[in-house]
Image (cartoon, rainbow, N blue to C red; front, side, top):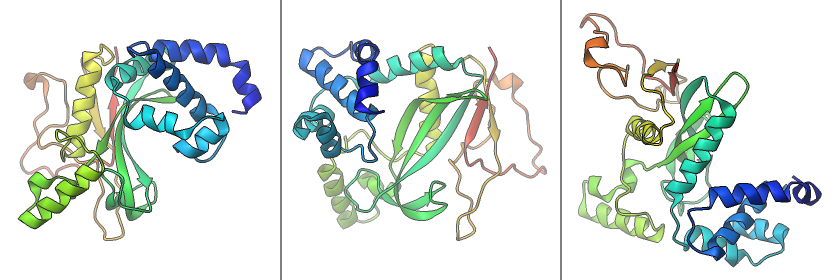
Length: 261
């Protein structure tokens, strides 16, 4: 969006920001939230603080402080965004996905050499697990989590020296102590439970497995899945039983939750 186009929608954007950031107790936070939103909307390949501040004509520390130091309830913001998205999209299905964000260094939380479909190979990246409301025509992210590999959890380290190094890396990245390694399927179920708590998820849904690509080592690269039946949200009496002799279905690269109201 160009600066001229942004001026044309300034009123609507301010109304949107006022609704999304209504949980902020301080006026300065609400102002900086709207500023950050405008920075995201403006044209420009890089959306980090310094380039965005240059395009907005403000000190980048104002944006930096809002994102990294200012205390505000991100769950309330995410919930408001999810509620608005569901009204607009009128989803026909929920899709779970994991997306790689390629990185050059090792300073970002959760960054590691791991497989990502974004690059189609094992590379240095962060992985985000997300839930999307979709139709045949559009998609909107409703919830997401940063995946922390085991090497980012000092509680899982086998050696004391390794645990100390991991703890120091977490400290430098300001990783909260309650954020630990969880399989991607557990993160997915946690997000679905949160959406259900917000009143946005239907009572019954079914998880479908999709064919998996393989990485260069010939291994499948799934979101991961829990053991047992993959029909979540259904009473035990309604779950299908698999014969012990019947081959197991391949693990899904993503979980597509199809549902009906």
